[in-house]
Length: 345
Image (cartoon, rainbow, N blue to C red; front, side, top):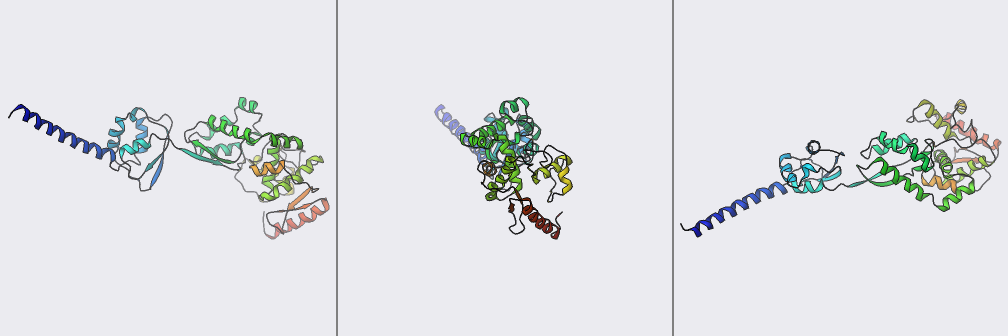
């Protein structure tokens, strides 16, 4: 056998070996290697995870971890695990899995009318990586509060219920700073001018807006309720807002999960700076997180002479308004009778 023929045979052998290796490599890279039944799943890799820790998480979703490791290892994934939130689809091969684990995807973070800053921190922590303690620490940092013009009692005014886009592994500081920028953007010149015309600061507007929101769930009624409360403030009357009594009961019992459907006369004597039956003016802080409709209701109150209002028994969900105490007492008596008739405690 001459040299030329030998070389040709060797070349053919090498070619077939390369083809065989290529087929094996192709199958290893692109054959489906998932073991979940859902069409797609989101996987969360915590910050600072090493490859072994990532494997422990991915093992719930990847069928042949050795096959995945051999492919991902060729691209340096073992030494460069990316933290975050990743989308895996059923039937993905190892190369597709590797590519998916390089794309940290953001998510929509939502929160609504939380009653305390602690509840807000817990709500956020249920959606992103940082825990509620870390989030609460960032939100109540003394230096930040001083620079931003808040106290621990009214910082809840900074947070406007909405949907925001964050990465799952974002930091508490990024969340805080993003929400603070939204607050600054919201309080534009027009809203600030309206607050000044009422003789209120933006924080005081939010404090009153929280009371208005707790008083009525009807968005179209909020400007009317806001007008009544502002009339009381302007006449140097006690605000006498039942929602502040409800908040006081929860605060004193340290139970913000309880449902309070009725306020009794004895409750009006609970001693707290939040109880507007005991102390004049607005409470010292927020009783809840108001949404934009409530804030704008305070900034754009309905002009009227009503001072009193009571839950209506004829138009459920709304209130019966009165200009005199005598008229109000008649409305109140109807409401008390309705409560007793329906055994509402």
